[in-house]
Length: 135
Image 1: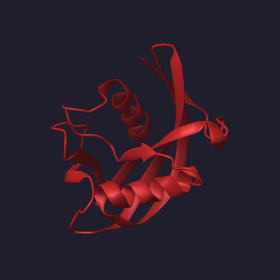
Image 2: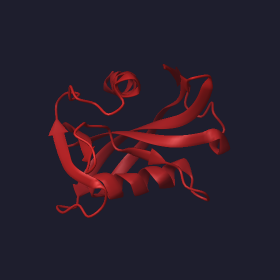
Image 3: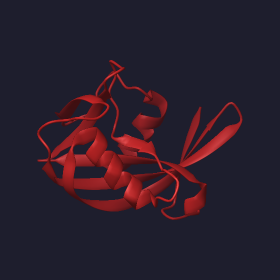
Image 4: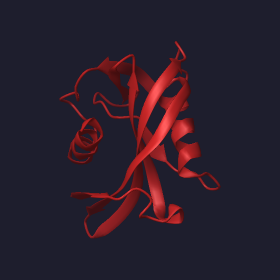
């Protein structure tokens, strides 16, 4: 698997499949654990039909981490190539201002941390994207 960081806006929006959010709340990074997994990940998800990447980011932040208010900054685009197939995503840096106390969607747990957790769902991709966001 190869992950490549690409300049912001270099990939046309119709070619983007995913959004990933490097989000902070009260000076700590937000990570989520899906109810069917024991590993952690940055809030992320698919861009749905008719959605812009920004809209997908706001929706996924709410669904996965209970984010009610935040400010998004488009950090970069990225490409992930695995088994000869390349898919594109957009990475956001997010400052969260308000979170909902109770989660009702697919997330079992939200973790606020000063560092990347050791047990990651997508370690190859998430380490690269997190390092890029943290720098």
